[in-house]
Length: 420
Length: 64
Ligand code: HEM
Ligand code: SF4
Image (cartoon, rainbow over all chains, first blue to last red; front, side, top):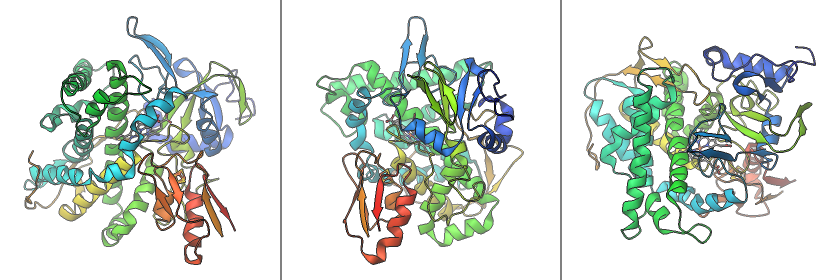
Protein backbone atom coordinates (compact mmCIF):
# COMPACT_ATOMS: atom_id res chain seq x y z
CA UNK A 1 0.00 0.00 0.00
CA UNK A 2 1.34 3.45 -0.74
CA UNK A 3 0.52 6.37 1.50
CA UNK A 4 -2.63 7.26 -0.33
CA UNK A 5 -4.32 3.96 0.26
CA UNK A 6 -7.02 3.53 2.82
CA UNK A 7 -8.50 6.95 2.12
CA UNK A 8 -11.96 7.57 0.71
CA UNK A 9 -10.37 8.21 -2.69
CA UNK A 10 -8.44 4.98 -2.51
CA UNK A 11 -10.31 2.53 -0.30
CA UNK A 12 -9.13 -0.87 0.84
CA UNK A 13 -11.01 -4.06 -0.03
CA UNK A 14 -12.39 -5.10 3.32
CA UNK A 15 -15.67 -6.43 4.67
CA UNK A 16 -15.79 -7.62 8.29
CA UNK A 17 -18.79 -9.80 7.38
CA UNK A 18 -17.27 -11.67 4.45
CA UNK A 19 -16.48 -15.41 4.61
CA UNK A 20 -12.94 -14.67 3.33
CA UNK A 21 -12.38 -12.44 6.31
CA UNK A 22 -13.63 -15.17 8.66
CA UNK A 23 -11.04 -17.49 7.10
CA UNK A 24 -7.92 -15.38 7.53
CA UNK A 25 -8.70 -12.49 9.83
CA UNK A 26 -5.46 -12.48 11.85
CA UNK A 27 -3.39 -12.03 8.66
CA UNK A 28 -5.76 -9.50 7.20
CA UNK A 29 -5.74 -7.40 10.37
CA UNK A 30 -1.95 -7.67 10.69
CA UNK A 31 -1.51 -6.22 7.23
CA UNK A 32 -4.02 -3.45 7.81
CA UNK A 33 -2.53 -2.52 11.16
CA UNK A 34 0.97 -2.34 9.71
CA UNK A 35 0.12 -0.37 6.60
CA UNK A 36 -2.88 1.70 7.47
CA UNK A 37 -4.26 1.40 11.01
CA UNK A 38 -7.27 3.57 10.17
CA UNK A 39 -8.50 2.74 6.66
CA UNK A 40 -11.62 3.36 4.58
CA UNK A 41 -13.63 0.62 2.90
CA UNK A 42 -16.59 1.20 0.58
CA UNK A 43 -18.62 -1.79 1.75
CA UNK A 44 -21.92 -1.31 3.60
CA UNK A 45 -22.13 2.34 2.57
CA UNK A 46 -18.52 3.04 3.59
CA UNK A 47 -16.77 2.98 6.97
CA UNK A 48 -13.39 3.49 8.61
CA UNK A 49 -11.71 0.44 10.12
CA UNK A 50 -9.42 1.02 13.13
CA UNK A 51 -7.01 -1.84 13.77
CA UNK A 52 -4.20 -0.51 16.00
CA UNK A 53 -4.52 -0.57 19.77
CA UNK A 54 -3.90 3.16 20.05
CA UNK A 55 -6.46 4.19 17.43
CA UNK A 56 -9.14 1.91 18.87
CA UNK A 57 -8.59 3.19 22.41
CA UNK A 58 -8.48 6.81 21.27
CA UNK A 59 -11.93 6.49 19.69
CA UNK A 60 -13.45 4.36 22.45
CA UNK A 61 -12.48 6.91 25.08
CA UNK A 62 -14.01 9.86 23.25
CA UNK A 63 -17.77 9.24 23.13
CA UNK A 64 -18.45 12.90 22.34
CA UNK A 65 -16.73 12.61 18.98
CA UNK A 66 -17.44 8.91 18.46
CA UNK A 67 -21.08 8.46 19.35
CA UNK A 68 -23.00 5.23 19.94
CA UNK A 69 -26.46 6.79 19.76
CA UNK A 70 -29.03 5.20 17.49
CA UNK A 71 -32.34 6.42 16.10
CA UNK A 72 -35.00 4.07 14.80
CA UNK A 73 -38.50 4.63 13.50
CA UNK A 74 -40.63 1.49 13.88
CA UNK A 75 -43.18 2.83 11.35
CA UNK A 76 -40.70 2.85 8.50
CA UNK A 77 -38.18 0.40 10.00
CA UNK A 78 -35.45 2.91 9.17
CA UNK A 79 -32.96 4.90 11.21
CA UNK A 80 -29.29 5.69 11.70
CA UNK A 81 -26.32 5.37 14.02
CA UNK A 82 -25.89 2.61 16.57
CA UNK A 83 -23.01 0.18 17.01
CA UNK A 84 -23.60 -2.21 14.12
CA UNK A 85 -22.56 -1.97 10.48
CA UNK A 86 -24.71 -2.39 8.49
CA UNK A 87 -27.48 -0.62 10.44
CA UNK A 88 -29.75 -3.11 12.22
CA UNK A 89 -33.44 -2.20 11.76
CA UNK A 90 -34.55 -2.89 15.32
CA UNK A 91 -34.96 -0.55 18.32
CA UNK A 92 -31.74 0.50 20.08
CA UNK A 93 -30.04 -1.43 22.85
CA UNK A 94 -29.57 0.30 26.21
CA UNK A 95 -27.24 1.50 27.63
CA UNK A 96 -24.97 0.50 24.74
CA UNK A 97 -26.59 2.62 22.00
CA UNK A 98 -26.84 5.86 23.98
CA UNK A 99 -24.44 8.70 24.80
CA UNK A 100 -23.94 10.70 28.00
CA UNK A 101 -25.86 12.15 29.77
CA UNK A 102 -28.59 9.64 28.89
CA UNK A 103 -26.09 6.80 29.13
CA UNK A 104 -25.21 7.73 32.75
CA UNK A 105 -28.85 7.43 33.73
CA UNK A 106 -29.25 3.89 32.44
CA UNK A 107 -25.79 2.65 33.36
CA UNK A 108 -26.07 3.95 36.93
CA UNK A 109 -29.49 2.36 37.15
CA UNK A 110 -28.18 -1.16 36.45
CA UNK A 111 -24.49 -1.05 37.55
CA UNK A 112 -25.07 -2.46 41.01
CA UNK A 113 -26.74 -5.57 39.59
CA UNK A 114 -23.59 -6.41 37.62
CA UNK A 115 -20.94 -5.63 40.25
CA UNK A 116 -18.71 -8.53 41.35
CA UNK A 117 -20.61 -9.07 44.59
CA UNK A 118 -23.98 -9.34 42.82
CA UNK A 119 -22.47 -11.80 40.34
CA UNK A 120 -21.18 -14.07 43.13
CA UNK A 121 -24.85 -14.48 44.08
CA UNK A 122 -25.37 -16.33 40.78
CA UNK A 123 -22.37 -18.64 40.99
CA UNK A 124 -24.24 -21.51 42.63
CA UNK A 125 -26.97 -21.19 39.98
CA UNK A 126 -24.42 -21.35 37.19
CA UNK A 127 -22.89 -24.42 38.84
CA UNK A 128 -26.30 -26.09 39.15
CA UNK A 129 -27.19 -25.38 35.52
CA UNK A 130 -23.84 -26.71 34.32
CA UNK A 131 -24.21 -29.83 36.49
CA UNK A 132 -27.78 -30.51 35.34
CA UNK A 133 -26.91 -29.97 31.67
CA UNK A 134 -24.07 -32.49 31.85
CA UNK A 135 -26.35 -34.93 33.68
CA UNK A 136 -28.56 -34.90 30.58
CA UNK A 137 -25.80 -36.23 28.35
CA UNK A 138 -22.99 -37.71 30.42
CA UNK A 139 -24.19 -41.30 30.24
CA UNK A 140 -24.31 -41.24 26.44
CA UNK A 141 -20.66 -40.33 25.86
CA UNK A 142 -21.46 -37.62 23.32
CA UNK A 143 -22.97 -34.17 23.06
CA UNK A 144 -22.94 -31.03 21.03
CA UNK A 145 -20.70 -28.83 23.14
CA UNK A 146 -22.35 -25.64 21.90
CA UNK A 147 -26.02 -26.58 21.88
CA UNK A 148 -26.01 -28.83 24.94
CA UNK A 149 -23.63 -26.94 27.21
CA UNK A 150 -21.81 -23.68 26.41
CA UNK A 151 -24.98 -22.21 24.88
CA UNK A 152 -27.55 -23.15 27.55
CA UNK A 153 -25.48 -22.25 30.66
CA UNK A 154 -25.21 -18.50 29.86
CA UNK A 155 -28.78 -18.52 28.55
CA UNK A 156 -30.09 -19.96 31.82
CA UNK A 157 -28.04 -17.64 34.04
CA UNK A 158 -29.33 -14.69 32.00
CA UNK A 159 -32.93 -15.93 32.34
CA UNK A 160 -32.51 -16.15 36.10
CA UNK A 161 -30.97 -12.67 36.20
CA UNK A 162 -33.84 -11.25 34.13
CA UNK A 163 -36.57 -13.13 36.02
CA UNK A 164 -37.74 -15.34 33.15
CA UNK A 165 -39.06 -18.88 33.85
CA UNK A 166 -36.24 -21.42 33.53
CA UNK A 167 -38.56 -24.08 32.17
CA UNK A 168 -38.42 -22.19 28.86
CA UNK A 169 -34.61 -22.48 28.57
CA UNK A 170 -34.57 -24.39 25.29
CA UNK A 171 -36.89 -21.91 23.53
CA UNK A 172 -34.73 -19.13 24.89
CA UNK A 173 -31.24 -20.54 24.20
CA UNK A 174 -31.75 -21.75 20.62
CA UNK A 175 -32.78 -18.57 18.78
CA UNK A 176 -30.08 -16.51 20.55
CA UNK A 177 -27.51 -18.82 19.02
CA UNK A 178 -29.01 -19.53 15.58
CA UNK A 179 -29.77 -15.84 15.03
CA UNK A 180 -26.05 -15.09 15.00
CA UNK A 181 -25.16 -17.34 12.07
CA UNK A 182 -28.33 -17.93 10.01
CA UNK A 183 -27.99 -15.99 6.73
CA UNK A 184 -30.84 -13.59 5.94
CA UNK A 185 -31.50 -15.47 2.67
CA UNK A 186 -31.87 -18.88 4.38
CA UNK A 187 -35.36 -20.47 4.42
CA UNK A 188 -35.19 -20.89 8.22
CA UNK A 189 -34.36 -17.21 8.83
CA UNK A 190 -38.00 -16.18 9.33
CA UNK A 191 -38.36 -18.86 11.99
CA UNK A 192 -35.22 -17.68 13.79
CA UNK A 193 -36.50 -14.08 13.82
CA UNK A 194 -39.82 -15.31 15.18
CA UNK A 195 -37.93 -17.12 17.95
CA UNK A 196 -36.05 -13.95 18.92
CA UNK A 197 -39.27 -11.91 18.82
CA UNK A 198 -40.84 -14.46 21.14
CA UNK A 199 -38.03 -13.90 23.71
CA UNK A 200 -38.73 -10.17 23.86
CA UNK A 201 -42.46 -10.81 23.86
CA UNK A 202 -41.89 -12.93 26.98
CA UNK A 203 -39.81 -10.14 28.54
CA UNK A 204 -42.68 -7.71 27.94
CA UNK A 205 -45.25 -10.12 29.43
CA UNK A 206 -43.16 -10.85 32.51
CA UNK A 207 -42.40 -7.14 33.00
CA UNK A 208 -46.13 -6.38 33.01
CA UNK A 209 -46.79 -9.29 35.36
CA UNK A 210 -44.09 -8.12 37.82
CA UNK A 211 -45.76 -4.71 37.93
CA UNK A 212 -48.65 -6.32 39.78
CA UNK A 213 -46.45 -8.13 42.31
CA UNK A 214 -44.17 -6.98 45.15
CA UNK A 215 -40.59 -6.39 43.96
CA UNK A 216 -38.49 -9.52 43.51
CA UNK A 217 -34.72 -9.78 43.16
CA UNK A 218 -34.58 -9.98 39.36
CA UNK A 219 -34.09 -7.31 36.70
CA UNK A 220 -37.54 -7.28 35.09
CA UNK A 221 -39.11 -6.83 38.51
CA UNK A 222 -36.55 -4.12 39.32
CA UNK A 223 -37.41 -2.38 36.03
CA UNK A 224 -41.11 -2.62 36.91
CA UNK A 225 -40.71 -1.02 40.34
CA UNK A 226 -37.77 1.38 40.44
CA UNK A 227 -37.73 4.81 38.78
CA UNK A 228 -34.96 6.05 36.48
CA UNK A 229 -34.36 9.79 36.59
CA UNK A 230 -37.57 10.29 38.56
CA UNK A 231 -39.98 8.26 36.42
CA UNK A 232 -40.85 4.61 35.92
CA UNK A 233 -39.51 2.95 32.78
CA UNK A 234 -41.65 2.65 29.67
CA UNK A 235 -41.92 -0.74 28.00
CA UNK A 236 -39.74 0.30 25.05
CA UNK A 237 -36.86 1.21 27.39
CA UNK A 238 -37.29 -2.08 29.24
CA UNK A 239 -37.03 -3.96 25.95
CA UNK A 240 -33.94 -1.95 24.99
CA UNK A 241 -32.27 -2.88 28.28
CA UNK A 242 -33.34 -6.51 27.93
CA UNK A 243 -32.04 -6.57 24.38
CA UNK A 244 -28.58 -5.32 25.37
CA UNK A 245 -28.28 -7.63 28.39
CA UNK A 246 -29.57 -10.76 26.63
CA UNK A 247 -27.94 -10.31 23.22
CA UNK A 248 -24.76 -8.89 24.79
CA UNK A 249 -24.27 -11.67 27.27
CA UNK A 250 -25.30 -15.02 25.93
CA UNK A 251 -23.66 -16.00 22.65
CA UNK A 252 -20.50 -14.04 23.55
CA UNK A 253 -19.87 -16.16 26.64
CA UNK A 254 -20.75 -19.26 24.60
CA UNK A 255 -18.17 -18.34 21.96
CA UNK A 256 -15.44 -17.69 24.53
CA UNK A 257 -15.95 -21.01 26.32
CA UNK A 258 -16.26 -23.04 23.12
CA UNK A 259 -13.06 -21.53 21.71
CA UNK A 260 -11.24 -22.26 24.96
CA UNK A 261 -12.34 -25.90 25.05
CA UNK A 262 -11.46 -26.31 21.40
CA UNK A 263 -8.01 -24.84 22.01
CA UNK A 264 -7.44 -27.11 25.02
CA UNK A 265 -8.52 -30.15 23.01
CA UNK A 266 -5.54 -29.79 20.71
CA UNK A 267 -3.09 -28.32 23.24
CA UNK A 268 -2.92 -31.15 25.74
CA UNK A 269 0.02 -29.68 27.67
CA UNK A 270 -1.83 -26.44 28.29
CA UNK A 271 -4.87 -28.44 29.32
CA UNK A 272 -2.92 -30.63 31.75
CA UNK A 273 -1.35 -27.54 33.24
CA UNK A 274 -4.71 -25.82 33.81
CA UNK A 275 -6.17 -28.96 35.35
CA UNK A 276 -3.23 -29.24 37.73
CA UNK A 277 -3.18 -25.51 38.57
CA UNK A 278 -6.75 -24.16 38.80
CA UNK A 279 -5.42 -20.77 39.97
CA UNK A 280 -4.16 -20.29 36.41
CA UNK A 281 -7.65 -20.51 34.91
CA UNK A 282 -8.45 -16.78 35.26
CA UNK A 283 -5.21 -15.86 33.47
CA UNK A 284 -5.92 -18.41 30.75
CA UNK A 285 -9.43 -16.97 30.42
CA UNK A 286 -8.10 -13.44 29.86
CA UNK A 287 -5.72 -14.80 27.25
CA UNK A 288 -8.58 -16.60 25.46
CA UNK A 289 -10.56 -13.36 25.57
CA UNK A 290 -7.62 -11.58 23.98
CA UNK A 291 -6.84 -14.01 21.15
CA UNK A 292 -10.40 -15.00 20.24
CA UNK A 293 -12.18 -11.70 21.01
CA UNK A 294 -15.81 -13.01 20.95
CA UNK A 295 -17.03 -9.58 19.85
CA UNK A 296 -14.61 -8.74 17.08
CA UNK A 297 -15.66 -5.18 16.43
CA UNK A 298 -18.31 -2.53 17.09
CA UNK A 299 -19.11 0.77 15.38
CA UNK A 300 -19.29 4.46 16.30
CA UNK A 301 -20.69 7.53 14.53
CA UNK A 302 -18.51 10.59 14.00
CA UNK A 303 -20.02 13.83 15.37
CA UNK A 304 -17.24 16.26 14.28
CA UNK A 305 -14.39 16.07 11.78
CA UNK A 306 -11.12 14.93 13.36
CA UNK A 307 -7.79 13.40 12.43
CA UNK A 308 -7.03 9.92 13.72
CA UNK A 309 -3.82 8.05 12.89
CA UNK A 310 -3.17 10.49 10.05
CA UNK A 311 -6.58 10.07 8.41
CA UNK A 312 -9.17 12.81 8.00
CA UNK A 313 -12.33 11.41 9.49
CA UNK A 314 -15.40 13.50 8.62
CA UNK A 315 -18.49 14.35 10.58
CA UNK A 316 -21.22 11.85 9.67
CA UNK A 317 -18.77 9.03 8.89
CA UNK A 318 -19.00 5.66 10.56
CA UNK A 319 -16.01 3.94 12.16
CA UNK A 320 -15.44 0.34 13.17
CA UNK A 321 -13.41 -0.26 16.33
CA UNK A 322 -11.79 -3.65 15.91
CA UNK A 323 -11.12 -5.00 19.42
CA UNK A 324 -9.83 -8.25 17.88
CA UNK A 325 -7.13 -6.43 15.89
CA UNK A 326 -6.10 -4.20 18.81
CA UNK A 327 -5.79 -7.34 20.90
CA UNK A 328 -3.06 -8.63 18.58
CA UNK A 329 -1.14 -5.39 18.21
CA UNK A 330 2.57 -6.23 18.66
CA UNK A 331 3.16 -2.73 20.04
CA UNK A 332 1.27 -3.83 23.15
CA UNK A 333 1.46 -7.64 23.20
CA UNK A 334 4.64 -9.61 22.68
CA UNK A 335 4.16 -12.52 20.23
CA UNK A 336 0.53 -11.46 19.91
CA UNK A 337 -0.70 -14.53 18.01
CA UNK A 338 0.50 -16.91 20.71
CA UNK A 339 -1.66 -18.06 23.59
CA UNK A 340 0.51 -17.49 26.66
CA UNK A 341 -0.96 -17.97 30.13
CA UNK A 342 2.12 -16.37 31.69
CA UNK A 343 1.94 -12.90 30.15
CA UNK A 344 3.34 -10.37 32.61
CA UNK A 345 0.22 -8.31 32.04
CA UNK A 346 -2.68 -8.40 29.63
CA UNK A 347 -4.58 -5.19 28.95
CA UNK A 348 -6.78 -6.69 26.26
CA UNK A 349 -9.84 -4.91 24.89
CA UNK A 350 -12.15 -7.91 24.47
CA UNK A 351 -14.65 -6.18 26.79
CA UNK A 352 -14.19 -2.85 25.03
CA UNK A 353 -12.77 0.35 26.52
CA UNK A 354 -14.10 3.65 27.79
CA UNK A 355 -17.56 4.29 29.21
CA UNK A 356 -19.33 1.43 27.41
CA UNK A 357 -16.83 -1.14 28.59
CA UNK A 358 -18.73 -4.36 29.23
CA UNK A 359 -20.94 -4.21 32.30
CA UNK A 360 -21.35 -7.99 32.21
CA UNK A 361 -17.67 -8.96 32.35
CA UNK A 362 -17.94 -10.36 35.90
CA UNK A 363 -20.87 -12.50 34.78
CA UNK A 364 -18.96 -13.71 31.73
CA UNK A 365 -15.87 -14.51 33.80
CA UNK A 366 -17.86 -16.37 36.44
CA UNK A 367 -19.84 -18.42 33.89
CA UNK A 368 -16.64 -19.33 32.06
CA UNK A 369 -15.05 -20.56 35.31
CA UNK A 370 -18.05 -22.67 36.21
CA UNK A 371 -18.29 -24.28 32.77
CA UNK A 372 -14.58 -25.05 32.61
CA UNK A 373 -14.54 -26.46 36.15
CA UNK A 374 -17.50 -28.70 35.35
CA UNK A 375 -15.84 -30.01 32.17
CA UNK A 376 -12.50 -30.61 33.88
CA UNK A 377 -14.15 -32.48 36.75
CA UNK A 378 -16.54 -34.66 34.77
CA UNK A 379 -15.42 -34.77 31.14
CA UNK A 380 -11.65 -34.37 31.37
CA UNK A 381 -11.07 -36.18 28.06
CA UNK A 382 -13.06 -35.08 25.08
CA UNK A 383 -12.43 -35.40 21.37
CA UNK A 384 -13.95 -33.12 18.79
CA UNK A 385 -15.63 -34.46 15.69
CA UNK A 386 -14.28 -31.90 13.24
CA UNK A 387 -16.35 -33.38 10.42
CA UNK A 388 -19.42 -32.17 12.22
CA UNK A 389 -18.03 -29.01 13.84
CA UNK A 390 -18.70 -25.70 12.10
CA UNK A 391 -17.41 -22.20 12.77
CA UNK A 392 -19.53 -19.14 12.05
CA UNK A 393 -19.27 -18.35 8.34
CA UNK A 394 -19.25 -14.67 9.18
CA UNK A 395 -17.51 -13.40 12.30
CA UNK A 396 -18.67 -9.80 11.85
CA UNK A 397 -21.05 -10.14 14.79
CA UNK A 398 -19.55 -12.83 16.98
CA UNK A 399 -16.47 -14.99 16.52
CA UNK A 400 -17.83 -18.38 17.50
CA UNK A 401 -18.88 -21.89 16.55
CA UNK A 402 -22.27 -22.98 15.19
CA UNK A 403 -21.86 -26.51 16.44
CA UNK A 404 -19.17 -28.74 17.93
CA UNK A 405 -19.98 -32.44 18.40
CA UNK A 406 -17.72 -34.07 20.99
CA UNK A 407 -17.23 -37.60 22.30
CA UNK A 408 -15.98 -38.70 25.72
CA UNK A 409 -15.91 -41.75 28.01
CA UNK A 410 -19.43 -41.94 29.53
CA UNK A 411 -19.69 -41.01 33.19
CA UNK A 412 -22.28 -41.04 35.97
CA UNK A 413 -24.94 -38.47 36.74
CA UNK A 414 -24.33 -36.60 39.97
CA UNK A 415 -26.86 -35.23 42.48
CA UNK A 416 -27.95 -31.69 41.70
CA UNK A 417 -30.34 -29.23 43.36
CA UNK A 418 -31.67 -28.19 39.99
CA UNK A 419 -33.66 -30.50 37.72
CA UNK A 420 -34.01 -29.83 34.04
CA UNK B 1 6.03 3.29 46.14
CA UNK B 2 2.54 4.83 46.09
CA UNK B 3 -0.57 3.79 44.21
CA UNK B 4 -3.91 5.42 43.38
CA UNK B 5 -6.85 4.67 41.10
CA UNK B 6 -8.18 7.64 39.13
CA UNK B 7 -11.91 7.27 39.63
CA UNK B 8 -12.95 9.11 36.45
CA UNK B 9 -10.86 6.76 34.31
CA UNK B 10 -11.72 3.46 35.98
CA UNK B 11 -14.60 1.71 34.24
CA UNK B 12 -14.76 -1.13 36.69
CA UNK B 13 -14.72 -4.90 36.76
CA UNK B 14 -11.08 -5.22 36.48
CA UNK B 15 -7.85 -6.65 35.62
CA UNK B 16 -6.33 -4.98 38.70
CA UNK B 17 -7.89 -7.44 41.15
CA UNK B 18 -6.74 -10.35 39.02
CA UNK B 19 -3.09 -9.30 39.30
CA UNK B 20 -3.11 -7.77 42.77
CA UNK B 21 -6.13 -8.88 44.81
CA UNK B 22 -4.37 -7.75 47.99
CA UNK B 23 -4.02 -4.21 46.68
CA UNK B 24 -7.36 -3.36 45.04
CA UNK B 25 -11.01 -3.82 45.85
CA UNK B 26 -13.99 -3.41 43.51
CA UNK B 27 -17.03 -1.46 44.66
CA UNK B 28 -20.30 -3.29 45.24
CA UNK B 29 -22.12 -0.27 43.81
CA UNK B 30 -20.54 0.23 40.41
CA UNK B 31 -17.69 -2.26 40.18
CA UNK B 32 -15.06 0.50 40.20
CA UNK B 33 -11.69 -0.12 41.76
CA UNK B 34 -10.05 1.45 44.79
CA UNK B 35 -6.55 0.93 46.13
CA UNK B 36 -6.63 -0.55 49.61
CA UNK B 37 -3.71 1.70 50.60
CA UNK B 38 -1.64 4.57 49.29
CA UNK B 39 1.77 3.34 50.43
CA UNK B 40 2.42 -0.01 48.77
CA UNK B 41 3.93 -2.71 51.03
CA UNK B 42 7.25 -3.82 49.50
CA UNK B 43 6.09 -7.40 48.95
CA UNK B 44 3.20 -6.16 46.76
CA UNK B 45 5.14 -3.73 44.60
CA UNK B 46 5.58 -6.17 41.75
CA UNK B 47 1.94 -7.20 41.69
CA UNK B 48 0.82 -3.56 41.76
CA UNK B 49 3.09 -2.71 38.83
CA UNK B 50 1.63 -5.57 36.82
CA UNK B 51 -1.89 -4.48 37.70
CA UNK B 52 -1.15 -0.94 36.55
CA UNK B 53 0.16 -2.29 33.24
CA UNK B 54 -2.84 -4.55 32.80
CA UNK B 55 -5.42 -1.79 33.23
CA UNK B 56 -6.75 -0.93 29.74
CA UNK B 57 -7.90 2.48 30.95
CA UNK B 58 -4.53 3.47 32.47
CA UNK B 59 -6.48 4.31 35.59
CA UNK B 60 -3.86 3.08 38.05
CA UNK B 61 -1.13 5.57 38.86
CA UNK B 62 2.04 4.25 40.43
CA UNK B 63 4.62 6.64 41.84
CA UNK B 64 7.94 4.94 42.44
C1 HEM C 1 -17.22 -13.07 26.88
C2 HEM C 1 -18.35 -12.43 26.98
C3 HEM C 1 -18.56 -10.97 26.63
C4 HEM C 1 -17.88 -10.17 25.76
C5 HEM C 1 -16.68 -10.52 24.90
C6 HEM C 1 -18.50 -8.86 25.83
C7 HEM C 1 -18.07 -7.76 25.10
C8 HEM C 1 -18.57 -6.48 25.25
C9 HEM C 1 -18.04 -5.30 24.60
C10 HEM C 1 -16.86 -5.28 23.63
C11 HEM C 1 -18.78 -4.23 25.01
C12 HEM C 1 -18.55 -2.76 24.61
C13 HEM C 1 -19.63 -2.21 23.74
C14 HEM C 1 -19.24 -0.91 23.07
O1 HEM C 1 -18.15 -0.40 23.30
O2 HEM C 1 -20.03 -0.39 22.25
C15 HEM C 1 -19.81 -4.73 25.89
C16 HEM C 1 -20.79 -3.97 26.50
C17 HEM C 1 -21.86 -4.50 27.19
N1 HEM C 1 -22.01 -5.82 27.58
FE1 HEM C 1 -20.72 -7.33 27.25
N2 HEM C 1 -19.54 -8.90 26.70
C18 HEM C 1 -19.61 -10.17 27.23
C19 HEM C 1 -20.51 -10.63 28.18
C20 HEM C 1 -21.57 -9.89 28.66
C21 HEM C 1 -22.54 -10.39 29.60
C22 HEM C 1 -22.49 -11.76 30.24
C23 HEM C 1 -23.48 -9.39 29.76
C24 HEM C 1 -24.72 -9.36 30.61
C25 HEM C 1 -25.00 -10.22 31.55
C26 HEM C 1 -23.07 -8.27 28.92
C27 HEM C 1 -23.75 -7.08 28.81
C28 HEM C 1 -23.22 -5.93 28.24
C29 HEM C 1 -23.88 -4.63 28.28
C30 HEM C 1 -25.22 -4.32 28.93
C31 HEM C 1 -23.01 -3.72 27.62
C32 HEM C 1 -23.24 -2.23 27.39
C33 HEM C 1 -22.57 -1.41 28.44
C34 HEM C 1 -22.69 0.08 28.20
O3 HEM C 1 -23.03 0.52 27.11
O4 HEM C 1 -22.44 0.85 29.16
N3 HEM C 1 -21.91 -8.61 28.28
N4 HEM C 1 -19.65 -6.11 26.03
S1 SF4 D 1 -8.31 -2.60 35.68
FE1 SF4 D 1 -8.36 -0.39 35.59
S2 SF4 D 1 -10.35 0.14 34.81
FE2 SF4 D 1 -10.44 -1.99 35.42
S3 SF4 D 1 -11.20 -1.91 37.53
FE3 SF4 D 1 -9.00 -1.94 37.67
S4 SF4 D 1 -8.45 0.21 37.71
FE4 SF4 D 1 -10.54 0.15 37.01
